[in-house]
Image (cartoon, rainbow, N blue to C red):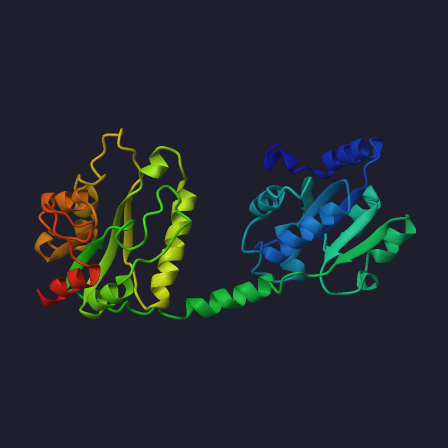
Length: 336
């Protein structure tokens, strides 16, 4: 059933109530303007629905709100307010309340429960005595949130008179350093992205680069996503741990570029292809001659060369691959 199907005329509510009663359902009734929905509304309507088998919500007409609230209200017309309320799973049916009080509707349908949200006593509701007279019960659901429509309007008005501050111009970086992740910054844990262990020298090296005015980004192959060993959520969670560890040391990573494709997929981003590096250069607006790639694999170095950037190898040392410690790599970049 769509939200529009749940919005009924009074005559249609008569038939719905009769059908509900025929199956032995307890009907709950509540009402309100619901001009600007907030968390308090959603909470109390959900709690109200839990107390009955079918919840009927009477939404005040535009004219009734103008009479009992403010001639300039509502902000949203009845049709839109009713649709929003009907869109909630907690609301079974929605109708119009064209009077200032719901008394006539309560007497007409005699719901077992008259439900209201707020911080007042049920005895203070003017219609409570009529509900008791036909054998119904009035229940007030305590407010869970401190939200109110009036408070929201006041905040919006206050925000409207504040001019948005001008953005401070971003400092021009001295250069860009693109860092491989697994095996360069953290110990390579295979296809387990939850394992995040910083390698020796990483904090010192990144602090040195950042202090010297270099912007730091990650460029990392993550074929584990493509072959189904882990998902995007797992990868992001591992990065969250990494960013927290670096953040505690005052180190900021501007952006994480990653390739989720397997080796069997023909993409342009998986290193040794230069796609991620080219994209980072474009995004960060840094020319290739001011970009340095630090990585622990030959593929990292090939990608850097293809993009016209400087590559610094920090992987396993061999005759054809002289290796630097990451701190020494950072020092060479800083010293030019």
